[in-house]
Length: 304
Image 1 (cartoon, rainbow, N blue to C red):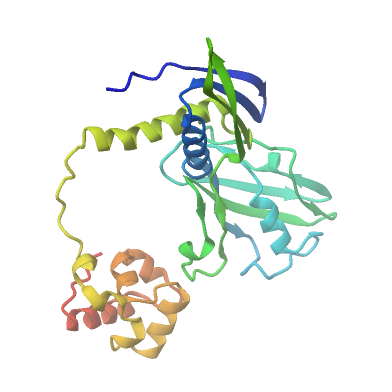
Image 2: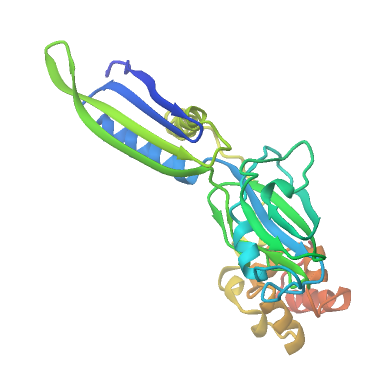
């Protein structure tokens, strides 16, 4: 039986958004094993927060212009994507901007409640000329990885979804060097460098990534029985799930509205919430009943 590993983790450098860690001595080969595993978890699975939806007063879509604002709306939205938040809530949070020019609008002008904190308040968002007004409502969500705007398309006029980069880790680098233990020189020393957006401490990020790995490995060593849940209808539909909304007998108007909102297949419809479908542009309660009837003819009950 392999002996339990004994090594140290020391933080050699610590800055606001940077940390350098040395993990040693490791058995030969484990430097790369740990380094690569931690790097992948750090870049993909550490939770963070980002703006996911934006509503600008007087603007119907992102390709508009706002009178008195130097940048166009697309540039303004790109700057909003750079705003970083400290937020640990599960539900979406609300924030807003309400300013009048002349003014250099910064991330620090975003009004939030006590659950949210802007990590980069000096970030410039836009410039307003004298008399120009900017009123913006923001929705902030927590998550991991990257979420594309198309996943949140609703067709609602004036609501602009944003691509969201949730990860608070901006860069991870590791290298492995040889180190000595007594007379033996075939041990590894792992040097791990982490850069963050300022919303998480690098050491906390390392601990979180290690706990994530441990949780996965524990499931291999002492597996917990997966609870049998009632199979979702989408799991047993087979080829029917891949049918397009145009192939199930929906009126052209209804099918086109669904496709524009991102609901292109039967599987998409079953996963969607009923209230979201009702709010889709050019749909409504009557159209949702038509959708229910069309699904019913395929033997599918639409209950959401």
